[in-house]
Image (cartoon, rainbow, N blue to C red; front, top):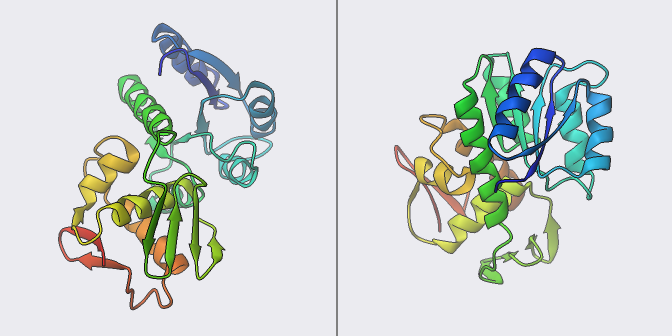
Length: 230
């Protein structure tokens, strides 16, 4: 998706300049911000196609920016790739749980960042393609056109990635899908071992769709392989 508009948010000027230079060289339009408050303002003004967002920001930190964007109906579908100098797993998991699409840990390879941007943009574009309108499994109804999931006529609040994981499992009901397959299909490329990403989303899905997430009847874990929809 060349010529897409990318908002790059980081308080380190040299990092912003590095990303800006390389993205423009690859045909992207770039908008920049250096703090969380300005980032939120730029999103509203510029309507970017994707946001590269550092977690450690002045004014408003990246986690709060992500949270605010995902709660706003005007910005909730804008894909976000997080940048972080932190190595703690909890920071990465928290960002993913809030709805971020991917993360890159500093120091990072510009080549890898661009590859991930392309992958996330591709997945965002693919999400708009025509799909099977309605999938029904037990009390669960997945409306792919409305991007809505209901259980016993009650609407469930799912993140974009939770919805995509559920839809993929439901579309392949009875078939075991490996964690690597789910990563590749939902996130657009191989995470090379970051299968915890899938486990986090499955855990949150179960809390939302199961009567008892400790004894799930919809999503079954296949030990050592992945998951399947019963």
